[in-house]
Length: 105
Image 1: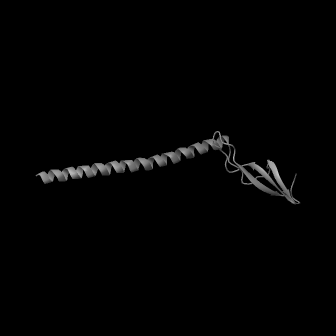
Image 2 (image 1 turned 60 degrees about the vertical axis):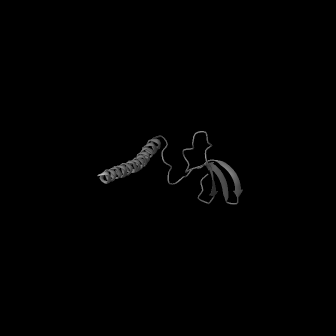
Image 3 (image 1 turned 90 degrees about the horizontal axis):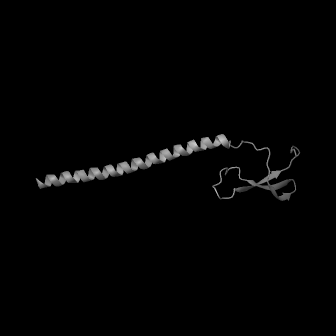
């Protein structure tokens, strides 16, 4: 009789542990999906106020850092890092522009 009681308690403990870990895993997976959905919604809202970058950039402005023959190098605010973190400086990148006969100034 005592063996049956121990077996029942063993099954109860195993079921509780399995339920705990199953619930923890489900909560973790659900939280990640919810976070991804929230980030996606926030990016869509932000695109309303700060539209995505165009595929072709025809005008560029920045600080010229070097001139070399038919090209020059210019330092500009990053085209890919559009949303700097508060309190951090805007990311910069360097672009080399080549001047050809088709270049309009």
